[in-house]
Amino acid sequence: MTKFPGEIRKIVLAYSGGLDTSVILKWLSETYECPVVAFAADIGQGEELDHLEEKGLSTGAEKVIIEDLKDVFVRDYVFPAFRANAIYEGHYLLGTSLARPLIAKRQVEIAQTEDADTLSHGATGKGNDQVRFELAYQALAPDMNIIAPWRVWSLNSRESLMDYAKANGIAVPASPKKPYSTDRNLLHVSYEGGILEDPWQGPPEEIFCVSVSPQAAPDRPEVIEISFERGDPVAINGERLSPAELLTRLNVLGGRNGIGRIDLVENRFVGMKSRGVYETPGGTILRVAHMAVESLTMDREVMHLRDSLIPKYAELVYYGFWFSPEMKALQAFIDETQNTVSGTVRLELYKGNCRVTGRKSDTSLYRSDFATFESDQVYRHQDAEGFIRLNALRLRIQAMVKNRKSQ
Image (cartoon, rainbow, N blue to C red; front, side, top):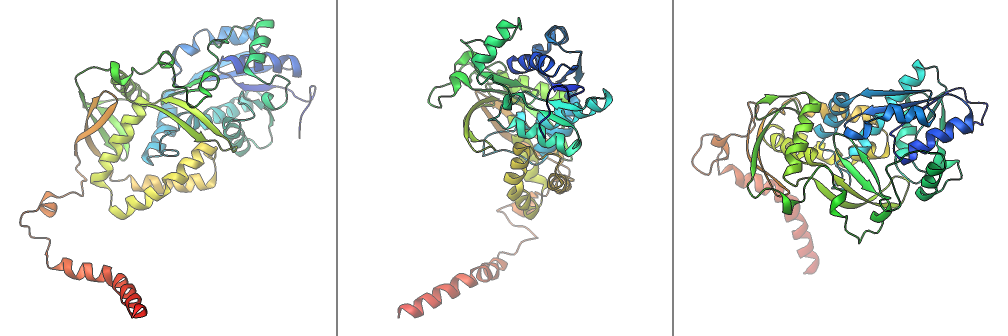
């Protein structure tokens, strides 16, 4: 049921300080005439958080809450997805999708602490994020009100938002000359809208902020080693790091070697196609390394079964069903497959490429004395004849029936 001004007691807004949420903060406080708490999760936005509290207060917030959730984000959201090798439509490593359930969960907790009755976000009425936020809200706090300004106000474009911001003295980073929107966290940076809406138009080099182009990367390869325990990365070149430190380090390594840029047209959950440009240097390296450890340590049938579920897992994340019962069950299965996934991978980073050059593990299922082309004591070549004949039986029967019919 839609709530009207006077029926809302207190609002907690998922706040980034960008164009949309800056305007929304002012609009909420004026429209609903109630206190608005602006909540920002620090999940690796860097300088975007500079002066955010001051900006939020000056824009109309009763209180601005900024929390460092970088380790929580990587440990509890990024790493579980990477244990699943999750990737949406073959390319997208789900950087924005994985951040939304964390922000929504903490936003709900803050609303409960602040005795607020309403949650709000800056997602547009065309995008995926409105679904992700609101599915999480309703899974975690079904009795709270939800205000999605993009679906109710008269401002219908980024240009109208910039006009509103100018009229109300709100400083925002977007401009008519640079109207595309960005979303940044420790896993990726995304760019969409504005000049990127033409899928034939290549992204200008100046938009990228965490990676160099492959052409500008060093002319010599950089070799690194990543160690895993039960499916999670724990060390780089033998140095143990926290989840956030590890992904930060990989972003630097990948970024300076031109790794992790993608440009794609994806299928949004709401039914339309969208062009997105992404930088995911650390995540790109991580997925390659994780799959290399799995190649040594995972049983074939377990791996194939898990791989068959990757599209479903990625869809659940992309569509916003992180807190659904099916996601909980699927994650439990994924985590069970990772019990033996421990070891170290050596990779060569060079001009946009990430190449595995070695892997080792104490739980390896690979045995050179089994796989060798030389003589061994565990495999009888003669056994292959019966194996092949049994697997060919249905093919032989089919051929025999076909031959009889043709006679």
